Image (cartoon, rainbow, N blue to C red; front, side, top):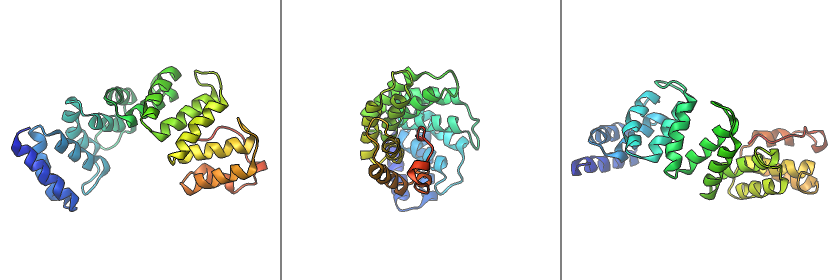
Length: 238
């Protein structure tokens, strides 16, 4: 972008920091039209989350698209999110979401690698592909993405494309729990609750359920409302 566009972007970001959204949009829009990727991604994000403007996926897509075409992984990821969810101005299209996630994932964005792995695991637009799911989830986990670690734990717990392996599942759950993932904490509580891969331990089960519930996990909160020996067995919702 031209120096003038970069200057407008800086002015727009400064307006954003002081909470002046109208001024931010007024500065960022011409910069984005001049090809400044930072301006385009910032504008797209405002419309994506509805910060100071009406949430509008169509308008967000208009700003994200040129940045994504220029190789910006964050813009590619947000286009994938909108295609996966659908919303104002964007029709839900999971195959298109996968295509955008693949681009962002190939550009190294851990969040996109995680979502791509989940879509392959769930098989929402095609038959489930646990091999592809594990490949992308492992790449996200290697970058420290806690939900990807938890999803890998679920893969090994359930034997999705691999032999069931409770110990490996627990290793992934522990990694994710150490990074604050509530679903992993709930899964560890369940493991100690029913004795999966570890000796049954009611004290540890309760401790993990409490940590998960305090972190916002609804499954754990429901479990704490019941005596442990009356709780249903089964996989935690991850």
